[in-house]
Length: 280
Image (cartoon, rainbow, N blue to C red):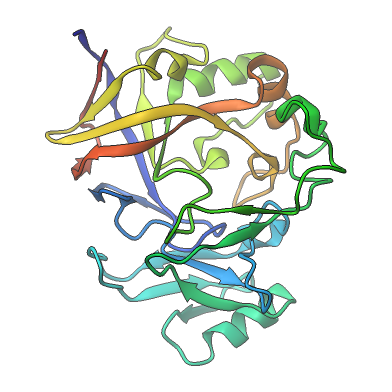
């Protein structure tokens, strides 16, 4: 068994409401199902479908943050900032009405319930921007791709409990595209950004796939697999402009994968500047 430090924790993010902008943190509590409070809420249509920014980019004009630290099995006060700058509380009786008015469609703000099966909506024609569906999902086309996809039971995660990304990969993508591009980690909505050594570049998470990441004193991240990206990486958000080159480059040079999706092997606390060790 080999062990080597591959970097330190540079950034930590939590996204209380699926597809809304989230909150940067200095430390996080990680449970068996990821960062406590991450994607705990989502907007659902009357049909039951979960609304996502894969289909509705306007969701990136909303942001959410907890007003107190959530704990396993317990909700915490949640504030949501609307596109016009107003802030509402998730527990307000009229929260869903206000969110529906701001979004321009009828939705309900819901908390994920254990054991429930949720399905999220996409637009097959635009889910990968201007990259052909077959380039991202061989054997599929925009005509054959379903307009919904199932989420892991009892969660609003797309497919995995945690997402990890390295600065070396971001630097490499920036070199592939050009100096005028903003390859900011926020485009990829990671939970943990690993600051890797200067000069270590490429899609370096590929080297992690058969191993385990040990982060801080106790956390172990396992079951890593390449993270397939979508049009959300190209959307305008906060101070980042829309840029389709992000996904085009990922598709051209790495089959559309950037970073890794993973599971939690051992829970614990992670803080900024914690060491990240790869065990193989």
